[in-house]
Length: 124
Image (tube, rainbow, N blue to C red):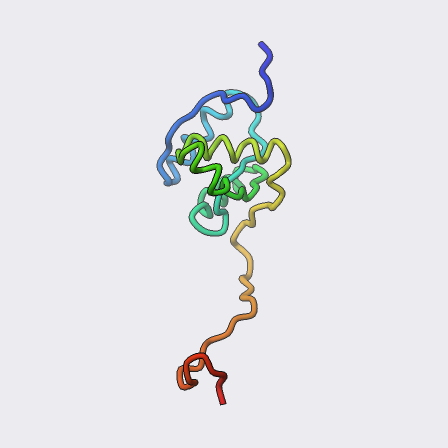
């Protein structure tokens, strides 16, 4: 039986827990080797899923959510978001690799407003 790449094979819902992440991979591996995954928000709300998938040896890509106009046209749904993530990885649109989250953290340039400065003015 041949399948067309990008065809939806199955959908499902899994809790955001270690057991849910394990349950997510079980049916996916029945279709063949799972090598890559796309996850929205790998540095925030998708971080724990990303770390789990990385620990399982998958290549994980940070996927940008659909643009707002597309979301309004197609509607918001978890299955559509998951399909969008998978297709972004398959097509190569998703290029940013998720970080393991176990290394040192670098804080970029930041500034704190001077509370004694006049509003809209610069500190003296």
